[in-house]
Length: 133
Image (tube, helix red, strand yellow):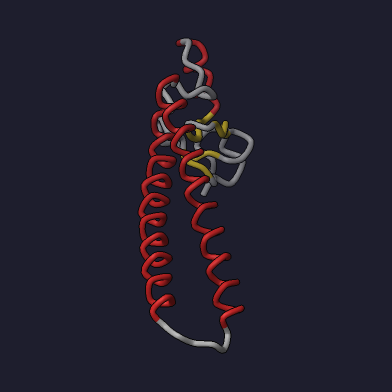
């Protein structure tokens, strides 16, 4: 398909504002979308800068919020598995393999405390960024 802006190149992009199909020579790719040269220049004349997002970056924090919720649920699940597993291991009277059981318990405890630490750090970062953005 032919470029609707210059008429020379192969149209690979569509302008976000006017909907023209444009070639790679006539396209302006920005963080807010793809613009043809005409719409890009119009936005610059009006005073809008298509390279800068004018909205607050609250959308970026929604992803962090989802990760934080996921980590909290993961922490609760791992803690339950760890403490319930320790209870049942304490109920068993097995002589063979006690060294391996101790190694796995230490590994599980380290993993649990590490993930809880990461969750706390992310929670603090979320509070800081949410307050100041």
